[in-house]
Length: 128
Image (tube, rainbow, N blue to C red; front, side):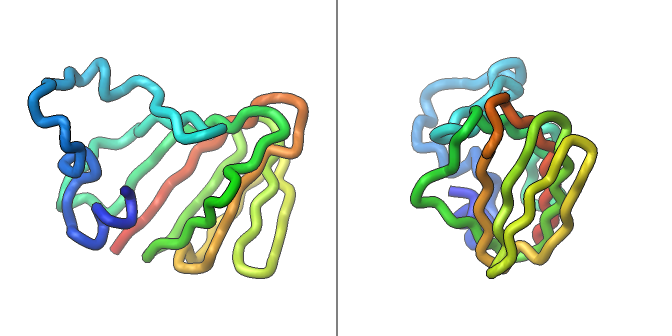
């Protein structure tokens, strides 16, 4: 959905086909789930916005199976809590609390949590 919204240059919420239900800003700020991930958007979306920030939580000992991300722009990930295993292209790194990574997000990348505790991340995307 994120890649489609970028390609069409529309807000990802505009792709939601349930137009009949009004969503309050309180509901929009709640966590959304995608498999073993939960994320909260920290910045306001908009067609003219190029920077998006998210708080992402990954459950213990999990990977987002079958999902490999790549999208135009840059990505910055800061580990708030726990551990993160991240593969970008052919390189894999394990980051601890307080560590970060910045990379070209056009490269295929995957995230997983190799630890026995939840991992919390600050993820910032720049999409030109």
